[in-house]
Picture 1 (cartoon, rainbow, N blue to C red):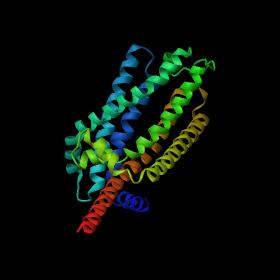
Picture 2: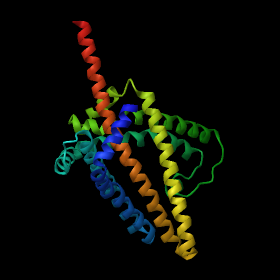
Picture 3: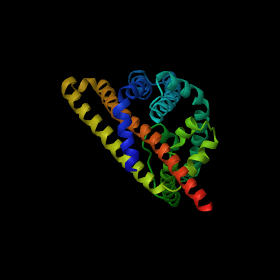
Picture 4: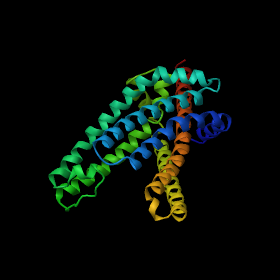
Length: 276
């Protein structure tokens, strides 16, 4: 993974300004607008419907931005217009892949939801962000164990899917990109898992630290009466840190794809030479 990281740094040094501009437009501004909507719009049906529409739009824009960044990261000859065309052309296949994976995740979560409902946990309250009263029963313990196993499985599958959208973009595949990504990463699973775990730790620390520091400073400046504004601006600070790290992760995934493809071709060449 050292060579992949070196190439990631090289791309960020060479094209960082261009990539950062797209990251701000597609990965930072849409979530910031959604946060502002949630912070300043009064609770109600209109807020719920608006939040849902904003979440869908944010996801779609972020997916397009990811494809754009991958296109510009894979080939240094790709300019803004070429990256835009590639992202536009592969957006629908990428969206289909994302929907299928999201549906699979929802299905995988259903047993845990059913076990919690059987044990008397108010699942609706949990989905609304309210901490429910939990009574420890066999069902809740089984649900907790299932969630832990599921999180481990998600980490494993997520690592194998790291080059997924590079495959969608570069090899022009749809759902077949899932199988292709799995094949590409099969010899490197645990190293990729380690990278993903490290990224998650850094992301959690950076976003939490940014939110805490900015929130603390703003509370001292604006006072206790500006809680909504302080919370919103602190959230923006966390989103800024998250956007920067997500940009690095996307560029890394593009370089990982190139490395895995090169490694695959090398193994094929060696097998051909041995057969000859």
